[in-house]
Image (cartoon, rainbow, N blue to C red; front, side):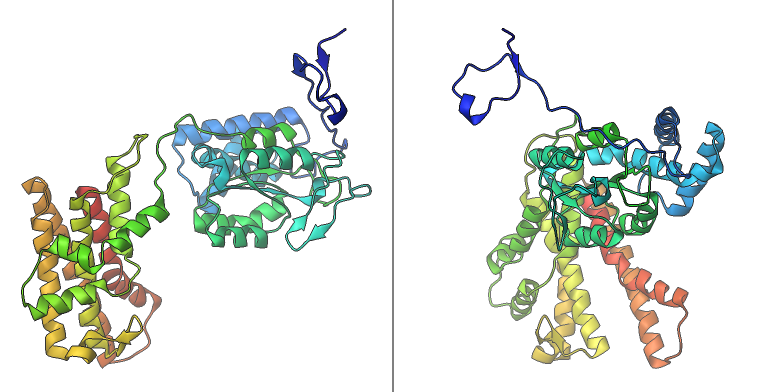
Length: 435
């Protein structure tokens, strides 16, 4: 009697376990030719995939690759492969996939979305119903959807049997998905690409061989390979939500006193710290912390720590930002900030201006007191000062326009944003990297 047997049924669960269990037989696909803009010969498709991977590696292509550049590269690769020009869109998908492959491998399965089209089903015999999100697979065994769904969910994927750029866009906007593995026709992939590029979401898409939405076929082993794609590098992945919570906690009254030092009967310091503790997204100290931790713990497999010096730098960066808000509110005549009266409405313009100046000084003081080499601190102070100069120039452009309103060109508007808004983020990122 053979020791090879099929999976035991409930009735035979008490029987001795077989040496190994035979897998279910592979579900066959319909035998159909590929559409005109997809190579019909599997050997050609495999060759193009290999050439795309070599091209990305040779040119050190960094994703997301803009569509215009992707088309240029696809045209060049098509000439190199000596295939018909009608296949350039297909080649562009292979190039995009190759550029994202290593990045996708580093994303945990539980942070990925597998998007499968319903057109892989056997339409005339499929018993699966639909809900608002897509097809609800009944695991009848008639098509490959069951195989992909069961295996992906076992690994931890979120799985949707649906299609269309709207689904991709909505899943990206939720922020719950860090990478997408998809199967779709070239037409849908082209519509989805701008959303993926804009969000810089790692995405690998296996093209369907047909686009008529009925009993479509795909290179099954390609899909299987990408679903299981994982990186050998298992280094620590920064928990951004936990870090965001930590940064928020640094701006409570007690934490600010610990970082900025105790003060006795100083009304300016009291008002400044109360203002610092008010609501805010803390984006600038958060970004500085992200960069700092990512660089310091690159390649580590341990939980990154948050030391007191990093907290001091974060508070310094927020001092600069909060000072600029005080001055900006006065210059713009704003009466409400964070759902409360602005500082100059609450305490008068003279006091508010002085508190803003005080916070600028506090920011520089905290940087100067960091436990860092002198040359590093000099460079950090230079960067902060340059940022202040640029920000003031941007604010000056806006104030000049307010005195003499006129239609602005898009270039002029971008100049104001570049000088008034961008410097604070630029400074935060540079200071986080330098420390």
